[in-house]
Image (cartoon, rainbow, N blue to C red; front, top):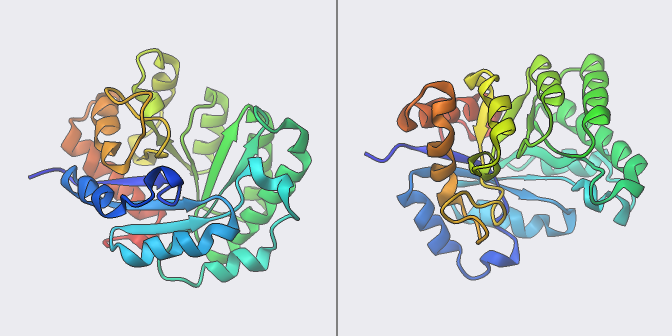
Length: 262
């Protein structure tokens, strides 16, 4: 029997998948991917993302303002985020975060937006989904400050930052998510960071259509490839693939409680 696993972060609304959703979901099922969270990165697309979750039993969704888009409009209203959380298939807040690699000029707005998303996670009890790039110090500082002010759950999506941010996140009880980057041959330092983390705090994702693992690197990613990434990294924790799939699925259930057992 094919082991069952969860893709904790994908982007099914992106145009890369237009007209292919039935086939895409069928391939995911065949690979053992029984659940997936599709992420809305701008609220004007939330109706489309929500419709995907309503159409496919395997699909859940989250919504927020991606940090690279934070300066394109007024800072998101807390009420808008908490209103979305009323939907039964809405399972997380974000993605939000900080990206100083591509959009350093909007650092202040990104931080303001991040704090609004954190408050939404507190108020709804839903986990925060964090994007962090080239902003490790500020990210660790803000997450630590905010967690002291009131606890919230969180996953560091597509984690590819340094060991200090990994340790800060783990110390707060957060989760690290493994993407196809960890399966790239040259990602030895990143694999070492993951190997030092408790397997109970690990999730797996595709971030599709991006970051396809070998042998599909450089081509379009899709939820079915969650299994390939998991197979490539399971040995970091001394597990075979079926055991790793069970563990990361249990981790997902612990964090994304609305999608538990679905």
